[in-house]
Length: 172
Image 1 (tube, rainbow, N blue to C red):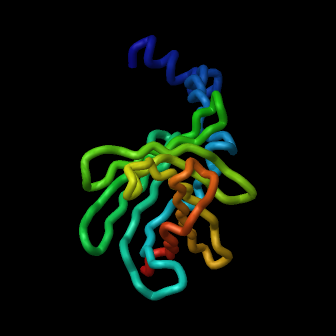
Image 2: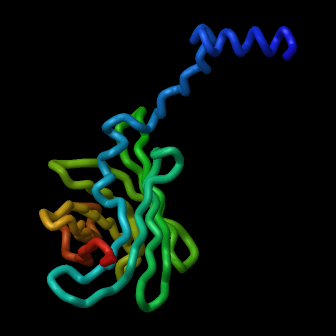
């Protein structure tokens, strides 16, 4: 055995070898990055209050835990994806939605009283006015997640029901 190898072996046996440098902490491991973790999972999606399944959805943490990605798979076509992330400078959450039609929708918001509320302009009404959509995600006691959507044609002065979905954990 060479002198260098013998010296290295002796240091390792004595425990005096310098340990490798520690990995830097994950910048997205902070508690504020977990505010939307309740939505992470494999889901069957239903119209709320019914047994009518409309989609399946896969929600996963990606990019070293810095983002939440949805893969939306409706039963009748029209797939889509969203990517949601926290801007730590402002404390605002941002979601980019891209569906099966050209274009994209940007939502922003954040946690409010245990729910995640995201708002953005999505489409137009019959008069060509932009429609403001507010989505409220809440965790149910049974582990389901409700996504309740409301729409406003007057920039949030008044709201009407738009959609109401319940994400149930996928069986098996």
